[in-house]
Image (cartoon, rainbow, N blue to C red; front, side, top):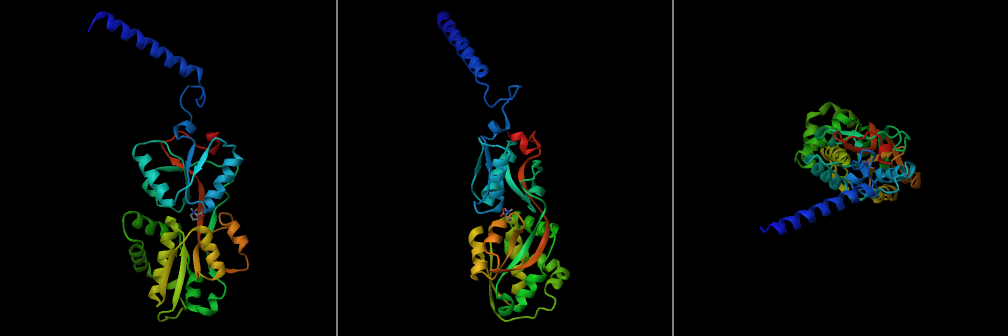
Length: 299
Ligand code: PBE
């Protein structure tokens, strides 16, 4: 190469670098005092949410408000899209913030942490309740009895959830759990008589926790002789369905806060059969390798 060309190019490079450098120092937006990118920058100010009807999304909107996260966007999607995004980010050790809940298989599969919620916007530990349509007790008393007696633990649910996550069909994972937990199932079916082909429809949303529970209860009712239909719907229609009687029951009511709006809207139009699981949690969840601990760190 000609000497003058080398000099020209070198000169241009120096000017270019200087321009970049001055650009960096003049615009300090989104950088902390050390000059490193903020958490917000690193995830494009996005919180990966789930389906818009979920109580978790409503709670997260309140969180954004309460903590003044005005620059942030909660991305709508689904439980499956959220876990897919998490899986992808985790594999590359990239930062990601998701809306999460317990019980969920993701805590067994990935090393994750809940961000502290010092304002307590996500609320306290909740229960998952079973809700029956009005009149179910008279129409299908044995199913009603089973639904009323159904209760298990987050650990039980985790077994089914993890099997599904590992690739088993939900109905197969549920059948296996039912087979291996005959004593628990015997408690749920105590004093319930066999039927022959009575129809029952259970509604559920495609949240991993509810896919697991609904399939297990569906299997128990099938074994009792019911012709069971599991109907996947959105959260709003699930509550509307059990209130207007188009669904016979749901085992997916997160109370008292997550589904509070739905619960209050249809109060009197359904029968609350009480809790089937205790010890749930909602919140913002990040991989443990991220260097933040509190929702306040997002500000
Ligand atoms: N969830 C799982 C649901 C209830 C079950 C926490 C995503 C919700 O937010 O409504």
